[in-house]
Image 1 (cartoon, rainbow, N blue to C red):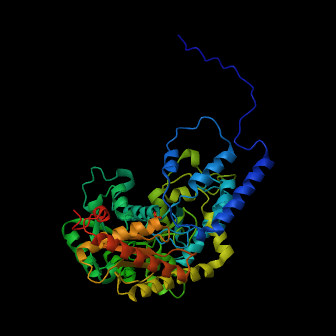
Image 2 (cartoon, rainbow, N blue to C red; image 1 turned 180 degrees about the vertical axis):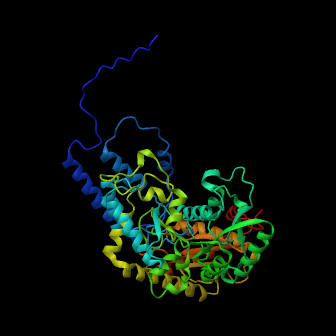
Image 3 (cartoon, rainbow, N blue to C red; image 1 turned 120 degrees about the vertical axis):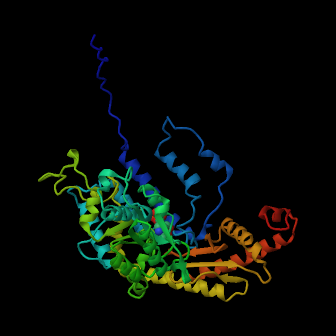
Length: 513
Ligand SMILES: Cc1ncc(COP(=O)(O)O)c(C=O)c1O
């Protein structure tokens, strides 16, 4: 029996839309949002870098799905009261934690303009696609790579590096890896190399690309946390003897922990001789190329087969925008391009010229992140960014000098670029409690709202770590940091000395039980 059709009675109600009913009212609210946002940015320095959230605020985020509308103005008010005051703080002049950029006022406006246009950036026959193309050409020139270089803007360094490694895997696997994958593959094990100081993206990429974490061969570092290139050669040789198939070496232009820069020229040479793909993770360090004075530090970057870097770190642009450049455009395309009938190019119209960017990575729907890069480079010019990068490097050296001038602070790694690792080390402070003291110090410093830095381990020692990718910092901010570290350090030490005091118990320090 044929199924009965549902009663398809057409009800002619007024159509819904998410556009405002009254554009003038929306304009007033929009102007207010913008005005208050500009005030917020202009006074950010006067606020704490970070502040803990009251329980009531934290709990307010557990409420259920809102079925009924509260309206735009009420939603905005909630944002102002419960969200904006509690960020992680990276837009503040005294934030130097992990490696996070600050954002810029123009970048924020560009994101708004891009959001209003909301173009679909798979490619298409549209000006926004040409903007991204032009940005990629500019970045190629900046990085000293050949004009024919291909590239794509992505959400950040992790994805940019993943794409670089995926192209390397495809180009060097020696079989149709896109067709067959690694399941059931009986050939030699594919392996690649990077220093043990390489950022966590590398393990993620190895796992995601089906290579497995053990295919990421961690090369030991030598003085200054740079890859030991002789050890790299030895490892490649022994892996080949074990019938593995090396396909890529990753060089670091600025490691996450200390900002160390590998000898990129030496790694490029190894890659040429061994016929391996040369990928560089220059997440922040690559931006040293902006400055003619600092460029020499990252020499060899221009020899990369693929290069990943972020514009949301050391070019300060709002999240998210990273870039991967690939020297061999055909290899880039071959690693990702598909033929799908619904996306086939036509002679004229919106899809004329074919898809550009969707064939260069994983994402199909992509945002117009290129606009903030394009507008910022035009508005400020490369020279302004070069000066800021130089300024941050000088600030790093200044901070290192302040640390070295004090007997109770210890510099823990060479400052090659913009990352300063140090610790509070009072006279007679026994090595075994220094890690606990510095950990507690770091938490108290962050809670104080004075400055935010982060921590890492260097050869078993806990280090306080300032990564300076901040265009708002002034020289005196670093004196504020050092004064706060010493003052808080003294208090932590005094608490730890109380032996059985509750604070000491909290710290888990020896003698506190
Ligand atoms: C050296 C390095 N590589 C890669 C990344 C990952 O970049 P993203 O956080 O933009 O994904 C970072 C992040 O700090 C980094 O410092």
